[in-house]
Length: 123
Length: 123
Image (tube, rainbow over all chains, first blue to last red; front, side, top):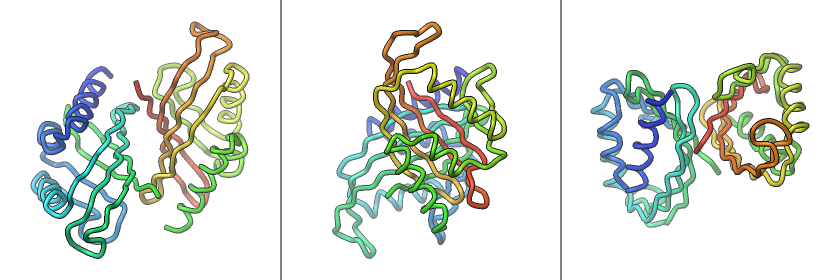
């Protein structure tokens, strides 16, 4: 059990420091699957390159004002983090509108790496 | 997708009103499995009677000062709720000590009922 607590705490610490890309690069498995609660191409990203590309798209298309990362919350080989984000999309229907978003990320760990991240949307 | 949002919001509304037992009685399946991140007999409770008995034990053995229920956060047929609790155990090693607890509950819904609840502990 100690291993997942250490990994989860380091992951959240990096998120709290704003180092989201570093957190992912350090702990995502090569076969990471990232699942969003929506229809379309963003619903499922499979493999490290696809997930890195999704992150790059996110940062290029959103101005990030503030992110709070609350956690980790641990059970077995999974941990959860609550994120509170204030962002302004640069493109799309909501371009220029400041959005307040709250979501929970559920991370599954195998052999010291995150093999799945699954996001739950509030509101 | 609408069905789970409605169920999840009603479940959280009842929790926010302090009606935790009513929330469970309304939405737990007869075959509910409740999973806690700990060793021992509380780790896994299977079936409605066992889960009701666990709840009864909890309320008999803790003085509840305050509970905040934050959510729901939804993905597919699952939803998450963050709970913040201030309680004082009446029995055991921590008897008489006021505890601040934060946890996330992850609920799995099938055919309009909660078939699994899985708790993630913070701290």
